[in-house]
Every structure is written in C-alpha cells, then in structure tokens.
Image (cartoon, rainbow, N blue to C red; front, side):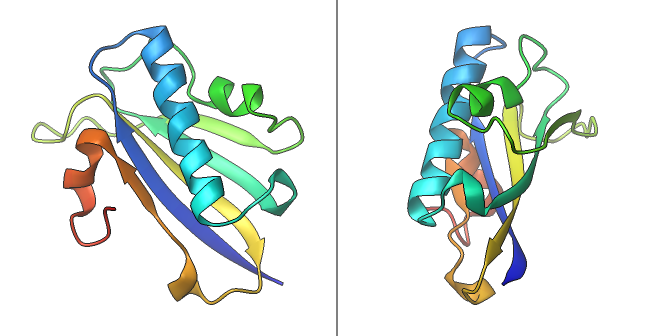
Length: 120
C-alpha cells in the first residue's frame, strides 16, 4: 500500500462554534464517502483554518465522527490579504493501492472557488 494525500476545504458563514463543527463534519464525511475510506485507511489529518476562525478546533468534528485513533492537527492558515475568508481546509494522509488520479478532492460551499479545476 502506498501513502496518498486527499485535500479539501469548506467555507462557513461566521466564526461560530456550531458552524465550524457542522461544516468540518460535512467536509470530513464527504472526503471519506467519495473516496470509500474508513478511519483505518487514514494515517493522519491536518486541519487549517483562516485566522478569522477561532471559535473551535476543526479536529473536534473529526473526533466526534469516530477519528479516535487517528492523529489530528489544527493550524492557522497564513494571513494573506486577498485570501478567501472563513475557510477550513484539510489534508488527509491515507493508505491506498489506488492511483493518485482516482483520489477525489472535496471543495464545498464557497470554497469551491479555491479549486475550480476540481471542485464538484
């Protein structure tokens, strides 16, 4: 088995704890579903949030979804003046025999603007 990375992002409307948790749960669920993954396939997940999101750690949503034995890390995105606001990103490292071209990266809500080339 090889190691692959899956990317994704979601935008929230406000720096609100419930919105951060709900949007992150939606993003994680979509990444897992579209790539037919279980938590046993996931090596680790890095979450980032734009500096305007401080109400909650995005990783908490993954823990609530059952990512109990998966290393999770939260970090802040760099504060670029023209960046899309209120965005939570993830990069999940997974074990898989699939080719990289089969991986489904997931961009939801306003975050589709980040990757118009691959947004669903």
